[in-house]
Every structure is written in structure tokens, then in C-alpha cells.
Length: 161
Image (tube, rainbow, N blue to C red; front, side):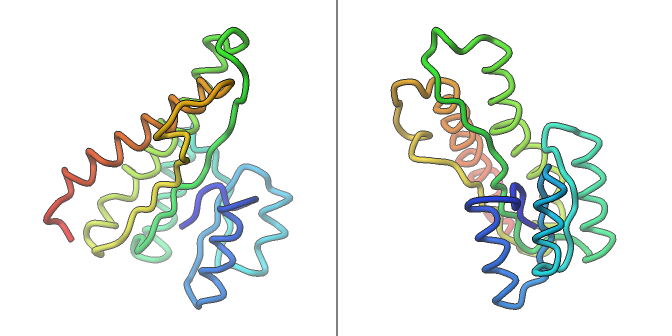
């Protein structure tokens, strides 16, 4: 499964996996772009990672149709490239909701099947998750948080395969 598969890294990843013979579930918010991608992958599903009900439905569909996930590429994300003085609380929350909370929700929803299948979780972050950049306060914060959560999760999952 690839989140954020309607453009950029997510689309390229979905297409590359499909070309290699994988059964790819491509997800994203843009139904038009999903329709363009549909002939190239096994399944496309509309998914807003900030909607807990949608996350649960998509995870259940993956488990029902495929028995679970072997690989989750958690790629969905948004950018906000404004200085701190132009980033209000609502904008910061939106970036954190997609880039951190959304990624965590999708990962948590599929972790039981990933663990059972000795699968792989790929969290797509950014160099902005390791460094700070001007006019990237919200984006850097979200990617730093995602990397920290992912590194801690790796320790929690040690020994599970």
C-alpha cells in the first residue's frame, strides 16, 4: 500500500512496485488522479489520512482483500513554507495532522498485519526532519516528529521481524 500515490514520490513508488509485479493499493485524496493511476495498479482507494474512519475502512479493505499488507509506504504529506509569523495555529495543526498524525494512524492501522507478515513500513520524511530551514517551521516540526516517532517505533518492534 502506498499513501499519497497521486503525485510525486508516492506515484513513482506505486508505479515502480506495480512494474515489478507487486499488487499495489494506491491511495490518495484526488479521485481524478487515482482514476488515471488505476489502470497501472491493482487497486486505488480514496484516502484522507486525517480521517480516522477512512483510515479504518482502507485498512480493513487491505486486510479483507489481501490478507494484510507486506509493505506500507507511508508517503502522504503536505508542505507549508511560510515563516513562523505567517503560520497560525490552524495551519500548524493541519500540517501536523497530515504529516504526523495521519502517518501514525495509517501505520497503526496496518501494523498488526505488517508484523504478522514480517512486512516493511517505510515512512517518507524529509531532510527537513533532521535540520531546520527558514520559512519551514511547521513542515520541519512535522517531519522531525515523524522521524522521532518512527525511530522509537523501530525500537518497540525490535525482534518482531
